[in-house]
Image 1 (cartoon, one colour):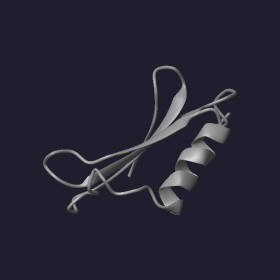
Image 2 (cartoon, helix red, strand yellow; image 1 turned 120 degrees about the horizontal axis):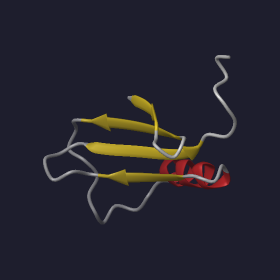
Image 3 (cartoon, one colour; image 1 turned 45 degrees about the vertical axis):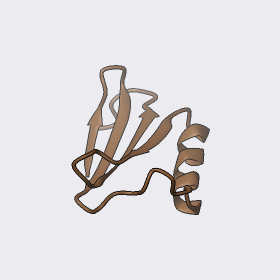
Amino acid sequence: MELVRGADRSLVLTVTDDGVGIPEDAPAGVGLVSLRERAAELGGRCTVSCPPDGGTVVRAVLPAEGGDSRG
């Protein structure tokens, strides 16, 4: 898992695995649909992709409002 701050001050969360991936024709289940809906509610987006070399990548980009909370 990787969490970084994007150039536009967004939060970018990426989770990858090295499994077999998800077939292109597989319908999204409740979990993936929920991830996309929750990201959209926050003004962001969530994508799921399967690179040609295998595995699955789930990436959420969420707006980061306000300043640095570490003070």
